[in-house]
Length: 114
Length: 112
Image (cartoon, rainbow over all chains, first blue to last red; front, side, top):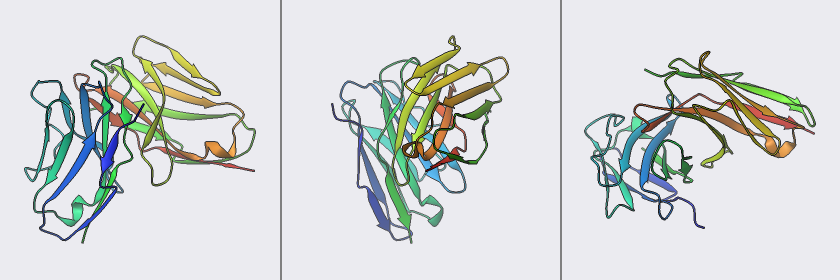
């Protein structure tokens, strides 16, 4: 079946602009995760959605970052007033419920803030 | 706070060699440990997942072990091939089972 998909694959934006990144998880996966991979910080957790529960936002670096998941499926990560340090690859993953299941990753969105 | 370290950072081996990649973590209260490979410019591909109650998992030429008490996991690759060249990442599931904490990766190059 189809894997996790993300769009766009690449995004170049000017400092101060808002951007939206999209993630389509694997059908039937109730858990969805966002991570960020940057040269200086490696791969770091941002936010986690599980069903209808309140999301775990503990990894979001600032209040400029937000995410939502509509209908328990598609998720959008929004970065407001982008800064150059936001430049990174944003990865989305999904899994079945619980800690016994692998997380499957999408190809990522490469964000460049100029 | 969980910290995950991988050694070595880079490794170059001739084709056919068996090799071991190392992963260590500071907090032994993990739910599971997952090994991934990442090809340049690509996302992560899951290789193996070891539950906290397990000692090892095998898939083809790959074998991963887990020793929670010492905070270590190893990925053994048998009979390496040039197609195995990639960055290998280990990640520990912690924080209530919500988040993976990743190591910095081992960049592997298998030469002909």
